[in-house]
Image 1 (tube, rainbow, N blue to C red):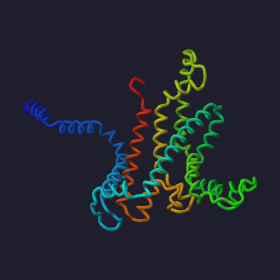
Image 2 (image 1 turned 30 degrees about the horizontal axis):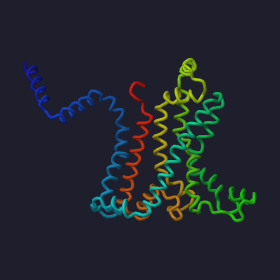
Image 3 (image 1 turned 90 degrees about the vertical axis):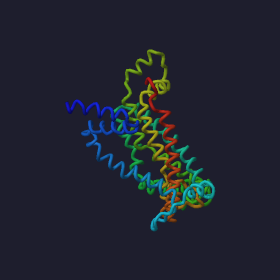
Image 4 (image 1 turned 60 degrees about the vertical axis):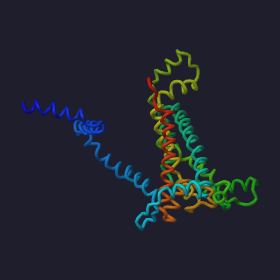
Length: 325
């Protein structure tokens, strides 16, 4: 009788509780029922909480403070954001426009190049694909070493530089050109180098997507009237590999918007000449690690995070499977 009378009381209490309490109790109950699964997920969730979630909230908090990294933060309200959007001429004239130009060319450009070359490699015989895949993927693994060995040597400002030597030999220039110190060329060189190293994980994901497309779909498409390879790509390949394309788009967005080390490696200085290659990441590093204005640097980081989120939402709307697919 005791057990039979307690159950209706508990149900009555739950029924009369607020909606938030009901959802919280249901959430706790679901976790307890799947406790083994959550136990295996715990290491990842703890690391994600420590190194992703908490730093984001700390950056958001510090963006409303004046903090030099040594003294206790002082609350400053929206002063950092107001200064960023109204008084920071370097951000408005250089960092923000350069970042958008860099992202609009390197992001879609690198994405389309990765798609194109992954499709071309997929057309090769299987025994040759691995060699070409490694050749395209190697620059992204080499990183700073490749920049030093290939691009810094290619655009060196003396007569020994590959480009200067070639142009001098051809008689097209009379004096060596300091390419990496010239404000008119630096950003374009950064874009070129970034496109060269853009064949990274997203490129491999697209190549895997091509290989996972069911070949029977192509046969059915030819019966339905598809006449050439271009129509196959638009009507069969792309709809069949949207998950891989979405993953590649997200990786391309993250890699592009967080780029900034390229200018430092090419020029050898934390701040590029006349801010010619100054991106938002460089602006954050400048204020955080050179000027020690951590609160202001956090405000720039939050703005960059918001831009990244908006662009990712656009990518999800573009490539996420629609209802019925």
